Image 1 (cartoon, helix red, strand yellow):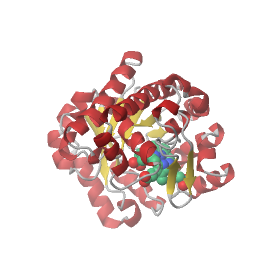
Image 2: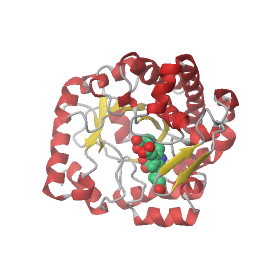
Image 3: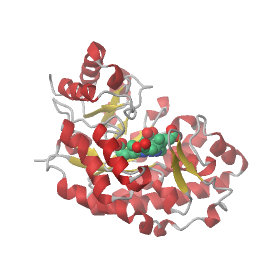
Length: 342
Ligand code: 1CP
């Protein structure tokens, strides 16, 4: 029997939507914190196939989600392209900003990423052996725009100002950077699929800050080219696109990029998305992550409302963004129970 998430991604409506959760392996789980401590730090955990597989499996064991997402990070691709990467505890990722690192010319070619990323493929192989047969394995990468914002600025930022400045000052240079990330992403994600990933998700977390033709050139077009390349090699592997905060640009995004499913953030209402996006195919989302902290009757009511809103078509239940470290695991268990009819 085909797994429930694969059925949804192929466009099938189901009475009970399959469910998984962004950042389901993470700091809100004591067993995750213990394994991360054992690994030493976050990056060592990403590059340790046994321990990365272990943290991927933890939320499956604890909650029985329908899918597992490979434990890794979108910033491993810049590192594999040769940019220094480290994480500052309590602050987040740091990279040597691209201009200081010698620009695009100093980076490796897209086909040279595999040496660095080989442990990630090993994690995928372990998971495809160890996951329960009914659970789907999701691989992922960042979409080029979001990855580029970190490469240019050397860190996360609220407005992605450094990348926007580069677009204004050197549009061709920025397009070349996007092209390099795009090629590396195709190589990386194809290798994940060959190692056993059954679905791919492209995270464009900062898509919302691109407007007009910038959105077309740097969010939509690169995603479309990546999906076209993946479909040429692996036609049966569904792709989930997540152009977060794209708002009205969500309309038509699945058709224009060839994505099988649109992951929805919390800026779009479920009723609006059911009317405007679901007719094009599967949608994923979009409970606000705050309910995993606060729980109570509002969690039950919102969960039921979202399931109901999307009940007329293909739907994968998820949060609108990643679960936060202050979330209560009991609320996660309750959300799953409600989705499954409890
Ligand atoms: O302290 C820790 O243990 C590290 C916290 C953490 C985790 C659990 C980071 C640092 N990355 C991850 C794992 C991760 N990141 C996954 C694994 C699978 C999962 O369980 O979902 C995935 C899919 C990501 C993707 C990711 N990393 C994104 C896109 C999704 C999103 O959240 O918008 C982004 C933007 C990153 C960069 C990143 N890595 C880590 C942090 C704290 C950040 C964000 C920094 C910022 O806010 O700018």
